Length: 392
Image (tube, rainbow, N blue to C red; front, side, top):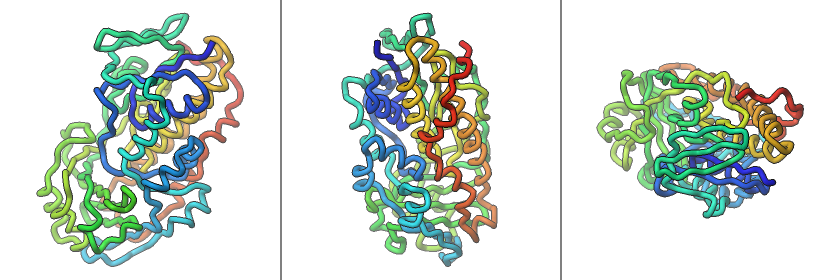
C-alpha cells in the first residue's frame, strides 16, 4: 500500500516537500488554511545549497528565466557610496559551490513550485485545528469540520505552527532588538544602482541590503534598524515611507532615493525561537519555519526549508513498509537535519548588529561557506542506519 502523506501549509517549504514527494512517486496531499495559494513578501536569496536541490526537481530553466544571478556584492559607505569591498559572485560562486546563487521574488518561486504539484493534491481553506495519531495513521481535523487521514503528517505551517505547538507545547519568541523595513523598488527608479549587483550599506545605526529580483526589473530592499520590543511578529505589518526617510537621512543619494521611489513599505520585526530538542513523533514531523524559525542575516530561511523538504522526501521514499519503517524514516530525517539547522539558526543571530563596523569593510564569505556548499541529499548517506524509532 502506498504511503499517504499530508502536508499542512502551502508556503515555500510545504510546496517544495510536495513537489519532492510527488517527484518520487509518493501520495501527497497539501492542506492550506488560505482560500487560495499565494506567497506574500518580496525578494529572497537562493544559495547554492538550495538551488542545487531545486534544479534536481526540474526548476533550473524557470530559475534562469525569472531569477537573477548577481555578479557581485558591493559594500559601500553609507554617507557617500564609496565602494569599501567587493565580493565576486556569479560564475565564481557557481564554480566554487557547484550551483548558482540566485536572488528571486518569493512569488515567482512559489508559482514555480506550485506548478510541480498536481492541482488536485492541494486543498485550500483547510485550517488545521487538531490532529491525533492512532495505530493506523494520523487523523487531521479542520476548522470547516472536514477530516483527512494520512500515514504521515508534515507540519510546514510556518513560525506560528499549530503542528509544532501540538508536538512541543507553547514557546516564547526571542526578539533580536531589530526590525526590517522592506519592499520593492523599480530598478529604473534607482539609475545609479546596477541591477546585476547586490549592495550593502552599513551605517552607524542601520544596514541596507539591496538585491535584484524579477529578472533585474526590480530591487528588493531590506533596511535593518534597532526597534524597541513590542512590534507584532509578522512579515507583513504596515510600514511607511516616512520611516525610510527618517532612517536614510544623510545617506548616499543613490540609496536615499528609496524613500521617494519605494512602493508599499512593510515592517518585519525580527524574532526567532530557541532550537527545538525534537521535531518528530512516530508519524508527525516539522520542516522549515515550523521547525527552526531563524533571523534573516544569512539569507537561509527558505533555503533550509528546501533542504528539509528534499531530505524528508528521500527518507520517506526509502522507508521500510509499516509503522516502524515510517517512524525510522522520520527519525533519520531529524538526525540528519536538526544539528545542521540548529547551527544555521544560531549562526544567523551573529550578523544582527547594524553598528558592527567590521561589516562595513569586508565581505567574509568564509563564515557561510559550509552552508552554501552543503548538499542535504548527499548528507543523508551519513544517516543510512535505522536507529530506534522516535518515541510517540
